[in-house]
Amino acid sequence: ALTLKEALEEVIPQKRDAITEFKAMYGDTVVGPITISSVLGGMRGNQSMFWQGTSLDPEHGIKFQGFTIKQCQKRLPGTGIDGDNFLPESMLWLLMTGSVPTLEQTNSLRKELAFRGRRLPHDTEKVLSCLPKEMHPMTQLAIGLASMNKGSVFATNYQKGVIGKKDFWKDTLEDSLNLIASLPLLTGKIYSNITNEGHSLGEYSEDTDWCSNICSLLGMTNGSGSSNKYSLNSQQSLDFVNLMRLYTGIHVDHEGGNVSAHTTHLVGSALSDPYLSYSSGIMGLAGPLHGLAAQEVVRFLLEMNSNISSVEHKEEIEDYLWKVLNSNRVIPGYGHAVLRKPDPRFTAMLEFAQARPNEFKNDENVLLMQRLSEIAPKVLLKHGKSKNPFPNVDSASGILFYHYGIKELLFFTVIFGCSRAIGPLTQLVWDRILGLPIERPKSLNFEGLEALTKVI
Ligand code: NMX
Ligand code: MLT
Image 1: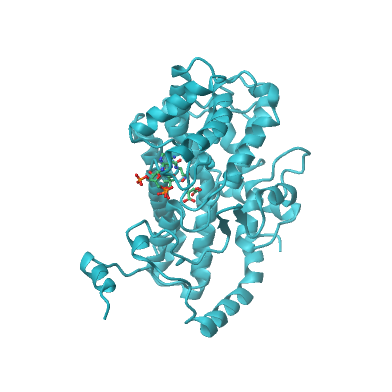
Image 2: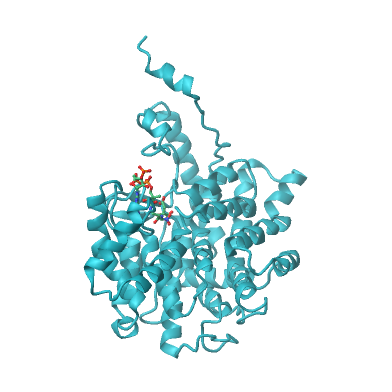
């Protein structure tokens, strides 16, 4: 199969049958107990969602259809040019179909997305142009995405009643691919709104990959009409594109329970179309305990650097961290609801910096980020509250983007939002393929919980 839709059509019948049969045979098998602590504690440890593309192990971290980040870096196709990171397009293929795409299949999806994303719907363009420059970029992204629901093929056909339930996935796929494809222009538009009076900073090309378009529209590349507003040399420009490919390739998802993925799935379960569903996911990603931590980390590093005399002074860093903890604030970029070891996504971002010592050796903020990853876990352990004292996904990314010139802190989570579309929308397509019902857990009031504790 050359197109993603054809590849899906090949795997769907067997997967559908297998899951239907499995449910019929094992439907009554108990998955696990749900405790009162879990009901009153953010549903922690409660295994109650079906999610195929990614899985998360507390000790080893994320796997994408069973592959670690390192395996993805080895096996997923990129541009074909030596040294380039794999393309998020090939990650999308892997998550959707369960198989590693060939270079040819990756290229075909790359071209398909570049074509689909060549322009924004007129109304979306108009809505985004009217938004105040000071509006939070994540609000702008959620508005932009929700506005695209006007063109939803799924919503239109559902309303007309011309599609059967078994085929819902086809229109969901169509919308999801259009949504993902639109993200370079949407992101570029938002960035130009906040930095350049809404005037475009770069050009969109149908001949390149998704991340090259994102970078061009942020004004971060050489050539292709990009303004290269930070005067990056050609190596830096290339590195930035590869940083974007790495970042957006590994932030796609983190199993189903994280706020943005879970929200997209929940809203989608009401048969809201992919635009509305993912716009809701973006609203969740915009919380400081979730994706917005990327912005908080950069603010934190900049502030700390202006309060310490040198990154070499470990005691000053420790004192600073204790001041934050003693004022009941969290250390952004540390801790996790599921992980109990350093996040391998953090490690991958750190390795990106370590592979370029000359580029980063004089950047005090990047040096502090690295230093902090050695010091903060010890302080958090001593503090004794956080179940995971290690750096999470947001610890390194923002400050690397900052290094290359993206200085608008509020914007970092929008880049996260580009990547996160890929995982939850893949699952939404599979929710439709498997005909999963509206999500509707049972809630309990205090009396209801209390009644459970009474011995009969
Ligand atoms: N700094 C200080 N205290 C912390 C931290 C931290 N980084 N992480 C957890 N704690 C506290 C937490 O606030 C809680 O305190 P209290 O009992 O007073 O409410 C206690 O430790 C136990 O929390 P955990 O069970 O370890 O963490 P939980 O699963 O509830 O929350 C996070 C997970 C990620 C929300 C939490 O670790 C946190 O707030 N981290 C900082 C924000 C952050 O980096 N978020 C990004 C997550 C990644 N992402 O992109 O979504
Ligand atoms: C994520 O990538 O969504 C975060 O690590 C948070 C989570 O997994 O809950």
